[in-house]
Image 1 (spheres, rainbow, N blue to C red):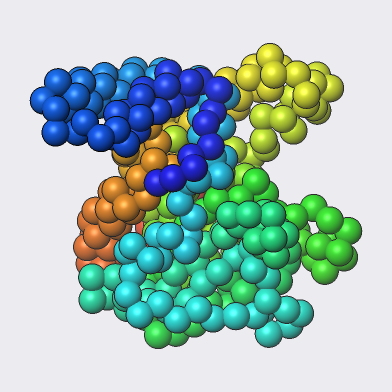
Image 2: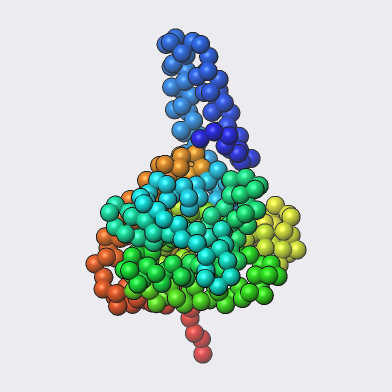
Length: 324
């Protein structure tokens, strides 16, 4: 991938990558010493990536989850699915480009794919509202889920949003109701629902399309009721204070490891060395393996069992105790 945006803690990685690029562009590649130097640098690069990414703080994980070069829903559709036909509109207000969806096939199985979509540049981000859906986006998702249910197609969702759009127009058109309706309707589906948190899983805007029989997270994605900045702002008026934002990120338990330990998610999908933004194809392949296994498991269940499986999954979340 070219023109990767460098995060501050990735400086050692970028330095080695630049050295490798310089050597590869020289006219002495036939020289054995140069080839050995490149090999040594590549070995060192792999080690540095592993060292850095195995010790990410929650705040650093947030940066990786938001990386602008990270693969989005369109990328996963390109790598994993065939015969994708995008479906538009909620049949009520309009077509929200922050959520895309349509029919496709996965390894010969007819499925419905739905996901948040961010843009790669300013123009695309404005058109897609930076992946923050309006009510019509969630109503479109519900429409497609019901279509999938009607035609017995498993639903595959990709979640990557900072949250549902909080604008005045969105509130006037019933944002909270649209999210609640999406969660409710998903709970009633009689087909398998498999969700992947692939970047940011922000609050109700994420869970609106993430109430799956199986929910997985990419290794360096995040999933939270609120952003670290929002939490820091509410608790300490410190949305612009990196130390307080980092403190909030630690407390929120937003990483894949934290959420797997809490049984909020069903599994963690490994990312390539240095994060998903460095290798879209490998990331998609890793998701494909998990998706294949999940479909094989869920397709053995009857429609009633799928609903019961989803019901038990979400009723079991959380731990509490009572005292007299």
